[in-house]
Image 1 (cartoon, rainbow, N blue to C red):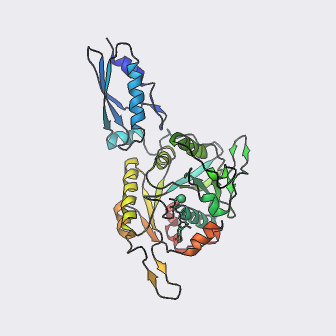
Image 2: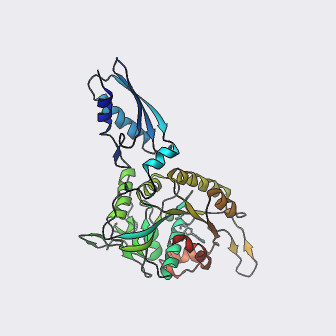
Image 3: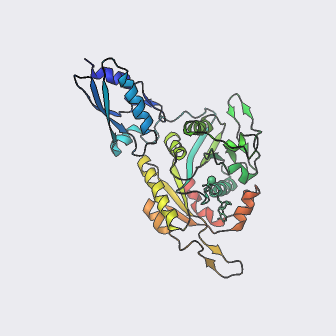
Length: 345
Ligand SMILES: Nc1ncnc2c1ncn2[C@@H]1O[C@H](COP(=O)(O)OP(=O)(O)OP(=O)(O)O)[C@@H](O)[C@H]1O
Ligand SMILES: [Mg+2]
């Protein structure tokens, strides 16, 4: 007769690949029943509803139990942990995060996120970093957009040429002293494509956190790929993110997708600190006032909907694109960005 203990023992060898802990240790296995005919049934409670690894985890769990002598069939029912269970598993400041290199001390980690692509996340990450650096803060940017990195280009940092030491990889340093780590600094030419699958991407994000000699930083900004992708989830689940700045544009659709991002953050208990509406208006150069090219602003409602403390509008300004494309983003001053900098201290 198969025992419950055997089932648990088999499942304690199955890992949640993202969290690096076993399904048993994470409390994901429930209601184990074993029938005489060798049918084992149990519930698999995922930590979040949208767990991207659901299928893999279920497959691994099934395989592990099938290996037990006498097991003919494995029936798995999927469920999702309650808010309380999740909180108990990931208390604020929990130590299940990958160890930070002992030479690093990072006070705050802020991720810049959007619902959809091309709304200006990377530009705004760079501009925020510049304003903070001008205030004398020590700033780093971790470019978590592994397959579409754009941070080095904005700062005119060439590919290759990163130096390593026994303690870790040294980040590139911008004119204003911002420390930058990006997959585009590791490839031989800017055009070389990084075509990696999920697990490699997740691995390199963790490496950028762990193996880079950031030193002492006041703020590490994390530029995310668009949306609620795997990579965004990896950042949120494996780095100690203190909060998020959401970037959107005035289009309704952009707002809708931002709310989707917000719902992922709620599930992970990460607060939205500020909302930036980019390309909010176009200031007519000959004094004709501000034109709302992409329609009326929704930033105030959006900020209220996601519970953000601050919101901000940035204009559509061809100089952002021009200076960004030529590696001179540090020359751009967005005066009103100052208004949200207090969120970072
Ligand atoms: N306020 C602005 N005014 C004019 N152009 C802008 C502004 N903000 C961003 N851009 C331009 O829009 C384009 C997209 O910006 P950016 O790369 O920062 O967006 P993103 O959200 O990071 O994109 P992705 O989703 O691809 O990572 C770039 O060419 C950038 O120069
Ligand atoms: Mg980007």
